[in-house]
Structures are given as C-alpha cells and as structure tokens.
Length: 187
Image 1 (tube, helix red, strand yellow):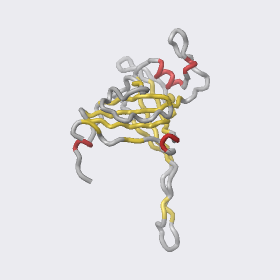
Image 2 (spheres, one colour):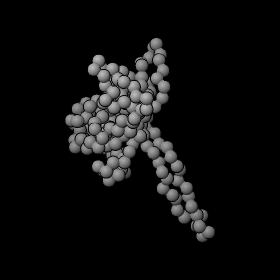
Image 3 (cartoon, one colour):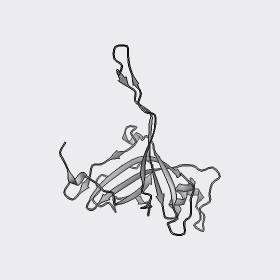
C-alpha cells in the first residue's frame, strides 16, 4: 500500500442525503452539494454532536480442536448503523424522529405524531468533505427513527436525535452499503 495524503480525510463538513429505499448510488459525484436526483439534502445537523457510525452485536469466537487450540473463528452477527442530530425542526426531520410516514403531514404543515412509531426506510448518502476532497458513503436501505429524548438548552440548537440501522439490500446482493475511496482534486 502506498501513502496517499489525499486519502487522509478530516470530515470538517458533511452532508446527509435521503432518497427512496433502494435508490442506486450516484454514478459519479463531482460536487458534494449536488449528488443528483432523487437525493434530497436532510439539512443542518449538529457540529457539536457529529454523526457517529455504530457497531453492535456478537464478537467472534475462536474454536479449537484437541490438535489445534485456534482452529477456526466464527463469523459474528454484527449490526451497523449511524446516529446524528438534526437541528432543523422541519417536516422531514420530525417525520424521521417520530416514525411518522407521509400520511402524518397535516394541511397546516404540522406533523401528527403516531401512537406507534414506524421506522422510516430510506436510502442514505453521506458525503464527508475535507476541502476539495470528499468521501461518499452510500447505504441503499436504512431504518431511521428517533433514538433519544429531545432536550432543550437556551444556548444551543434544538436537536432531534435520530438513529439509523443499515439493512441488507437486494440491490447490491444483500450487502448493507458501499463506501468510496477519497475523491476530488489530486486524487
């Protein structure tokens, strides 16, 4: 492996885009602010509580035999996901937080909060940006729902904590997503 300074990324800026579930990844992204249709920018998210990728589930177990104490390691059941804080109190963020589908939209622009939340399944594209370099992270099926209580602070943004679980997609042979290598100037 060679050293590639352009592939060392500090995600000082980033964007989260949503599209209908199983939307194909953009063929070419030349501008992180415009990945193309049908991707829609989620809007502002917290800089103080940056998005975080999660990993949970089993750890591998090493199995041995009488002749070889470390003969094989099991493949664990692992769940990957993402958490972020939306700081826009708009229809999209409120629907995601409360697990409210399109039918929850009211004529006056408010959201009717369901008794039983239903995770919203969307395609998600996150683009990490470092100057003129960027890294697209694409997941065709993500189950999104509010993940924690909303707390208010008179000196900070109102934020809606949302968690996503990456789901398998037939679009990519049962995988949960694809992360690109660094793109942009000089790469």
